[in-house]
Length: 222
Image (tube, rainbow, N blue to C red; front, side, top):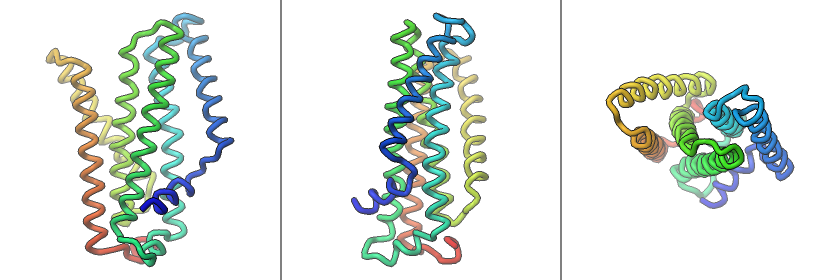
């Protein structure tokens, strides 16, 4: 299992230089937010900057995950991996675990960036809840993508945008309805986040059970 998990991160385009470059870019984004924000030029409010930081991090991780799945699909890695002395469900566990770990790193990095911006500009700490929203979006979209991937569906862009639409639409409707009812924003976001975690775990469990029973079809993963 450890070797499988290591393999998942190896096929992502992540290097030490890339991580350093990304961190420098994040600092530059925070700095630009300070300059363009309400304490600087006043071009954007603090909520816009926090949302912008979250979108940047989400876009970066989307590239990593998509590349991971595309590489596996291109080289039919699932077919090869099931010939090794490992259980089929362990291949699924490694994939979902790696995406979950990336999600944790994403949430931590995003929260750190927004916190730095808030400390510098004396912004509102409620803006950090943007991290929770984007983390929920990440878990929902990529949970659906992974389940579809292990089901043999290869049009990753279609899966991504479909899952995105299924998240954004109901989330906005639920947010407006609950906000109008006087429900606490923190309660709404926290409940929504844990609901999405349950969906991710359900996709994980379903994919693992399905692969344990039927394995990886060469026709599906070609």
